[in-house]
Structures are given as structure tokens and as C-alpha cells.
Image (cartoon, rainbow, N blue to C red):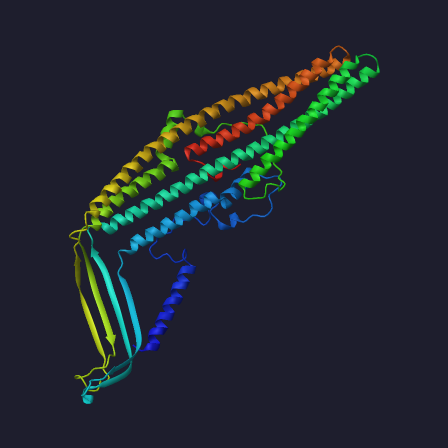
Length: 479
């Protein structure tokens, strides 16, 4: 093999490596990366085009808010990167079943001079360019299960990373929905305070007119004006609360907090899902078995168990197929003082190599004990995850029950408050009611409107929180 050919092959190899590295996901010969999503949002936004956004829609729907957050939030990107890293680890583990082939090429300029004192005929001088090339193969044939344990360990770690990614998506979904409904409730509260301000202004005008006609004392006008000023103050506070809630939602979507947002109004219509008709005991058992957090902890325990087997097997003998071919053009000489002559040589061997680790300073024993302790730790983590999930389901279930009752009660309260205000307004205009009756009815109506908006928002947030605690959130949960 000529020097030019060696360098040509090396250049082609380097170019191939660059191509492979630049198209890592497209080139997956060991099928280790098949389950990786194209976006950080996983199955919720499976297409990479779905993670490309412009300005927020007006009004901004929950679907878009969640998609923006899942695509751009650092937590989801971190979990996505961990999945890709663990998938590559599976590829590394599977690659151990394949042979390794390495080549070596060397070109040296040999300038050798030997001067034998008193015997010039024995002296020699050599100036030559020497090439040497070699190809070596090593293939592990049997290792008492070390490679299979490594594959199981890597596969379990990949499953853990995927479950953790799913849990991260579920958690962020709930957090964004909570902030979205909080912002929607703040917008609804602002709208309610504006209505109250208008009602207070009308009441102040009516009281002032009655005072001017001499049919009501001046105290009525003063009290009505006080109520109006209080309504203006409440509206200012509601405006600040809305801006704060909108900024929080914008930050969830990786947008600047000062970007203007517009949300749809809170609407009525509470329809409990069929999934929530199950008993709380059934929901808890489902979550203890299928929640992504539990699955991630169980996968970590499986990986720890495989690591114990891998560590033990690595301390046992392994059998490998070894082969090497070497070629060079080292000049040859018949003896000292005799000129060297051009020559070529080659060497080739193939055989079976047995490696037996007789003694490792007891390190293997302590490594096994360390891995066993980590396995016990991961098993305890599984129990803790199940306990935490069960508690979260219980709390979320009770929150849904409470918020559902609150929605019904707030509807009845709002209806009564509206009728009471209309009656008080008519009585005052007819001269048979007093200003305190009107102002009290006005305040009660304002409170009922705000409680209704908050109850509806709390119910929707509690519904998604329960779905998240069950690990069942998905595209269908984005209205």
C-alpha cells in the first residue's frame, strides 16, 4: 500500500466521520434513537414545524400557550437532551457486540550512521524512507453476560429518561395551565371591577339627582360617591393583578413579560369528564402503577439491578477473536558493515485470546457492594414516588370535588345577587329604598361576579391538575 493511498483513505475516513456527526439522528445503524421525539414537547407537539411560532394569537388560547411553553422551556429542553444522551448510551452498549477494527500507517525518514573505530569497513550509513501499515481486529466472543447487562442498564436508563421527560412535560403543562387560568381569572376580575365602576357611577348620578331634587339627604350622594371611588381603587388593583398574571404567563412561554396578551373571557359550562367518575381509590392505584414519575423511578431501579450484574460479569473471563496484519519496507542487511538492501516484509496472525482477571485488589467486590447499595436506594425511591403520586392524586381529586361544588354555588350566588341589585336599584329610583340598601346590593353583586369567575378558573385548573397527577395529560386536554 503506497503512502498516497494511505493518506487518501485517512482523508476519506475523516470526511465520513464528519458526515456522520453532522447527521447523527439520520444515521442510526444500531436503531438506538428511534423513540426520540423531534421536539422538546414530545408527543404533544410531535412535528418540528409545530414548534415554530410568530406573535401570540389574539386571543391567546390555552393550546398555543402550552405548546409555546413546552417547546421553549429550559426544563423540557434539558429533559429532551437527556433522552438523546441516554439513547446514544444504548447505541454504545450495543456496539460492544461488534468487532473493532483499527488501522495504523506510519511514514518515517530513517538516517542511520554507524562508525566502528579502527574498522572503517564495518561502518555503515543508511538514508531511507520507511513505510509501515497495519490493520488490527478485536472481537469479543463471550464475556459471561457483561455486554447484555450493559445493554439492559443503558435501555433502562433510556426508559427512565423518557419517563422523566414525560413527567416534566406533564408538570409544566399543569403549571402553564394554572398560570393561564390565573391570568384569565385576573382578566375576568378586571372586567367585573369595570362593571362595578360603571354601576357605582350610575348610582352616584342617581343619588346626586335625588339630592338636587330635595328628595334625598346629602349623605346619600356622599356615600354613593365614596362607593364609586372605592370601585375605581378596586379597578386599579385589578389592573395591576392582571398585568402581573399576564407577565407570568408570557414568561412561561419564553416571551418578554411586557408583551401584550389578550385572553378569551371565562365562559360557563362545567362538564365533568368520565375519567373523574372513577373512585378515588381506583385513580390512586392507576397513578401508582402508570404515572411517569413512578415509571422513571422503576426504570432507574432496573438500571441499577443491571449495573450489579454488569459489574460482576466484568470480573469474569472473556474470550475474544484477535487478528492483525502488518506490512513494511524496512531495509535488510546481512550483518554489521554490510550495506542494506531494499526489502519488504509482512506479518499476519489470527487467534483466540482469553483474558482472566485473577486479582484486582478486592476492588470488584466493593464495586458490587456499591452497586447493590445504589439498587436498594433506587428501590426506596420507587416506594417514595408511589407515595407522593398517591398523595397528589388524593389532593387533586378533592380539589376537583370542591371546585365543582364551588362552581354550582357561585352560579346560584350570582343569580341571587343580580336579582337583588336590580330590585334595590328599582326601589331606590322609586323612592322607597335607601342608599345603603343599594350600595350593599351593588357590593354583593361585585363580589358574586368575581367569585364566579374565580370558581370557573379554579375548576378548570383543578381538572388539569388531576389529569396531570394521573399522568394522562395530552393534546386532547388542550381546548
